[in-house]
Image (cartoon, rainbow, N blue to C red; front, side):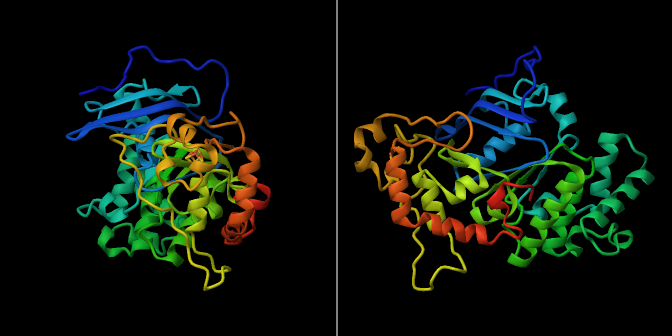
Length: 373
Ligand code: SF4
């Protein structure tokens, strides 16, 4: 069994950097079946007040990455390597006490299913107030007033009355709003939203995404949005990180990744996404095959068992050599295809058209300018 790489000396960042900087993060954890290589050498940045969408299928490592940022992995069975900087605080080497102080205060999380994340035994107001009391040392009266204020901010009608309701008195959309109120009650700098709208119907989904954008503008919060839905990213995020088998395979601004996708896996995600503007007789094209087991990830490029372009590159390269994410900054991808080959394939597959359809869903068309959502 492996252990987390806790150190006793606090790490010190050399010079200024982005608000959140993840550097060479590798996360392995032990299971009965063997060691799962959940995250492999992952690096990304998040700037203050912006939203990064992390996209990928189940098992791509996106949730494990964010649980590691929160320090919620099991230190007994997990080996974490690399660095995670939240401004001048390094999180991988931080003590348990430091992480407990940061969680709910500077870093907060919205979970996929509010019904299981909220306790059924306590009122919604009490659960929000407890977080505020614990981190801010507020009195019961102050914390209750703050809970009412937060319920009002997230659009719960008559919050003075609803503060004493239990979660089962709320609809699904209201429960997710209550979760957001609880996450934001201490004005966190970083909000991690893990599939925050998956359990909701489409109209409520749009309301919740709009709410997150409004709250980001009010509070200046930085957001990591984990999703498998590129449409959600198109509507909400500034930057996108596409993950596959624990690795980053493409990153860039929303405009770059949705309008000029470069990686075959991103093409596959876009081709499998329905669009209102697509002709009805044009079938969706799913990514063939299934995600690989992270107990024994494929050699070379992990996407090679599902990729249509292995023979174009040369099997020995795709199976034998791991492609690096290049260039180091800006729009990058991890694939051995040449830029000219990517351009040609993209034109043939009309991925640009599908991407444009994704961007059509954006009110205000943020994808065009990379502006604030
Ligand atoms: Fe496909 Fe090869 Fe590119 Fe991997 S490196 S995505 S297998 S073409």
